Length: 116
Image (cartoon, rainbow, N blue to C red):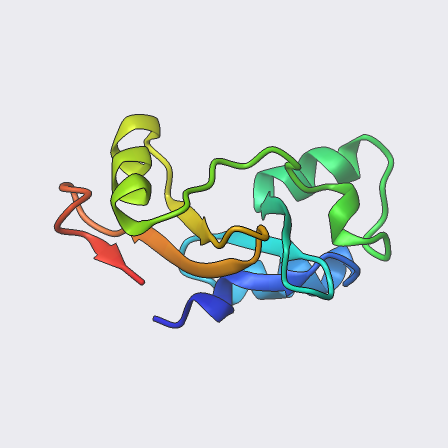
């Protein structure tokens, strides 16, 4: 699966984000700025909490995102983080913070269940 399907610009609306989350098998998106730098992770739970606190579906997805997501700088680190934290996905970033890949937890064994 192409990691781009898990990425979205932070300036898009929550309505758009919900549509993307609904299509996404892992129910997570990684938000980036125009340069492709990761700014936040977003799940349906993040959106739900934001809406319950008074936000609207027309607000920017960045408003609801987790701005301190777990990230890695390489595949081996991402594998370790998936297992250590029980994450469903870990984005792999380059030195400038741009999303280069995304490893996904897809089976009972993190090492055996990776997609990138």
